Image (cartoon, rainbow, N blue to C red; front, side, top):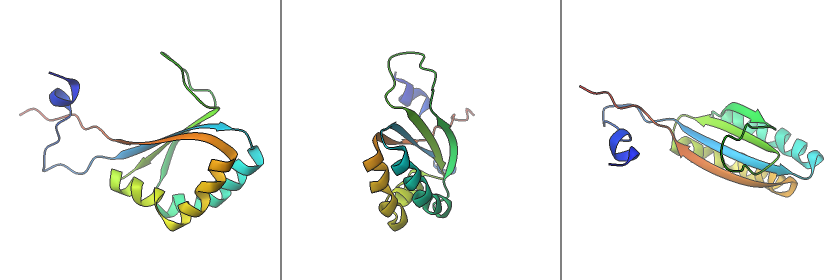
Length: 117
């Protein structure tokens, strides 16, 4: 039995799980990144983004971690994260980040501990 089959089942009567977007950035143009941050701000407010962490020095416990900064954002759902990422206002800001940094961006579905009856 794996972790997901044991602990990853969601009951249909529960609310939709939150989602998280994690970005690792290797910033090579700080001026460009500042322009991106200004441009992305409105899309983040409109998209219901909650920034949980912006960290230039994450503590790596195992393996290696890429980038000079890691950003963790919270959304109401995976669909909300996609809606923000694909929104017109963020599509305009995204190329500024891509020009200023080498990035990895992932969306993670939140986890809810199942209730045992």
